[in-house]
Image 1 (spheres, rainbow, N blue to C red):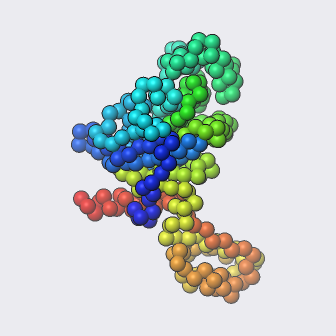
Image 2: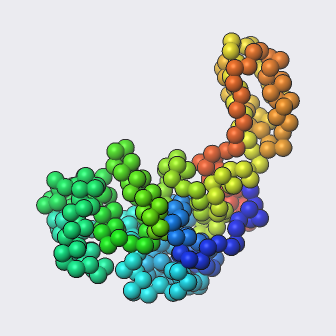
Image 3: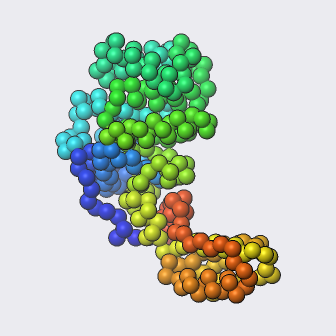
Length: 316
């Protein structure tokens, strides 16, 4: 998968990060990174630890000053007034440990410009919505990690932002809380908000997002629709299942990854003669089912990041 697959154009009505670069001493955190998140888009921001995702998000909200590049929201530079319309959920919790949950959420709502009464109303709504109604009078340090994560989301959403930046929002959540988080994020995008979120849980990203951005070592590897990135992969996965056990089988093309007498999994080049492979399986026994699919998002991610690391090592 090469740079030719990356799109250099994109919608400008939402968030536009263009040519972003940031260095911390000798460490290049972000290098000439460009990302677009349209209104109503939900974009997964993927990369290994240290890839530059957090630095990029902090640059958008003004916590980091980029060395180069521009960041705009709806075609204009982001200023203090614009930041009141951004909801940011950092990976490292930014909560006051000894402050009551309900007071904390309302406080951040006031900082974003809500009146006291509106902040209180919206705090009650999010406490209910996120399953925290009974913990409103608890101080944050008394909560489990998962519940603190819910409070952090409430803080990011209390002022009804137009742009959501969520850094590892699913970390530490149980399945029920993760489902609530997934529903809320989807609803915000469906309502017209721009949503950019990072996660190492690629199965969730693939379920939630049509579009992803993949980075490594601060550099863009690929961006676009998940379906397009999968289709552009040079690999395919073939699965064969026979009705009865067979003694052995070898695919005429590709690499046999697993075989137990009933089921086989083969890695094929995208250019493989699939008909010949299926015919070979049929000659070996009565075939019950055959499927051919491009790699999943997790496999695309490993393929791209692994290739990037190999290029870095070769250049040293």
